[in-house]
Picture (cartoon, rainbow, N blue to C red):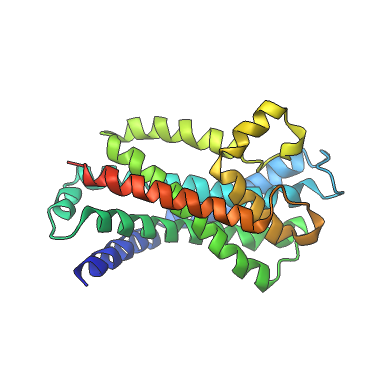
Length: 251
């Protein structure tokens, strides 16, 4: 019970911290709107096949981008906690470090899913008639994406000593994951060697699954939905185990 209480406490702390940061809540609505309206409108003449409008095509990709960037940002909490001594207090508490990692991961994932869900408010702007069923089915996929990406951020942060160092590494990891996921362009249009690189990008499967659920029959998915879920689940299990090991060695 003490382990579960520790996980819940750390989860609640991350959620409360997110709710108190009004600027992050505002950015949840502003940043996706800029991508959809400015970027999407700027190249909406581009053809993505299946007769689908480009803004509709990138909408699930912007959801995936929001999940990725928010999840990776959560790693900063580890550095802040180390800076102010809170991390030391957590690590010397009579609970396992695996529980510490899982609690922070669940808290960061909850924040990222909330921020990703805010993007769905703009579905009507791009002409997507999003029904409650599609939104509800999208939530587990969003959780699977954030579990893995928050874990990656926590692992990187546990190895960093400064915010500046983490910022550089975060950008270095975020941009390739985002651009190689097919969020902004169909992977059928890219060279063969780039397709193989995209196959090892976990966000590719998250974006493809979200596109399948949001656009429904108007878009032909790259992979079957069940395959996307299996890959995301396997990635999450592997990266959470690695993250728990990395946190266990944190000083």
